[in-house]
Length: 385
Ligand SMILES: *Cc1c(COP(=O)(O)O)cnc(C)c1O
Image: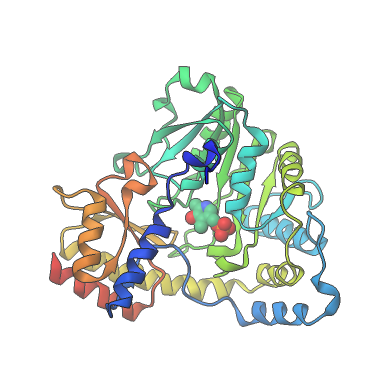
């Protein structure tokens, strides 16, 4: 069987491979603690689950839904942007529900890129920006993010010859994998840069509501005029502990949204009505629900940071996201370091290299395991270091 040549540029997914390895270890009776994948372990609010059940018990809610979803959901996201960011979004033209933001990120690439276009991608970064570009026949160009610059994009560092042929600039703050957060000034620079060079600007805001110690994370659409060139992706996966539900959105520039809609009408047939209904309830939850959940992540973060400091792994304290980005001791690649910890300590971390070449020398530790298990993981790591 021959697969299409376009699939050959998609190397295997790291998490699919690690899952096989972990499955094998577990079948041998090993107790593996997973701090690798960024899938929230805590449940959604019971109100959200109840809304799903109520909606699913109605016989009329099982049919195909419009690609634009239900008006209540688009209005709820519009209200969310007004309340949290003071940004007005027209629910009918500037908001498009997605089957998770990953799907939207990929289809955005199909909607705006021509073969040969260059896509500017922060490195390290979320893999789907690269994979979407490749699938569209475009050319990813990595822009280094580094600790000296707090993992913020340095627009001066981008080669002008490259920029000339670029079509999209990606941003993601709070950042996966580094946990870095942006200032509104950085967003202003990004919008200025994109407008000056006539780029599409895409901001991935998946972690906007996973924040600590009163930090609030901005939307790039707060920058005046941003909508001329910008879309922002958002999602309930990380913010509301709903990763398996597949409920995201893209908001902002209406022409781009029309183009994504055109792609999507040819690929999917809308979301599941009970998920749409429950997503409305999620967006209306009290702020205290988010705050309580964030305090749990914060306690895990602090537990890990103090343990890491004791064993010489250097990491900054993130103000948001569900990750710690830690520098590993020299001498081992990030893949070898993670394999060593998995085989010896039965603790699984994500090697930095899978997020791009600049991720080498780092590991990503996810806060998505219970505090008890994190304590256990820490003591095992300490034993083997
Ligand atoms: C988890 C994640 C997503 C994907 O979220 P879904 O809405 O579940 O598809 C998108 N971007 C980043 C940076 C993420 O970490």
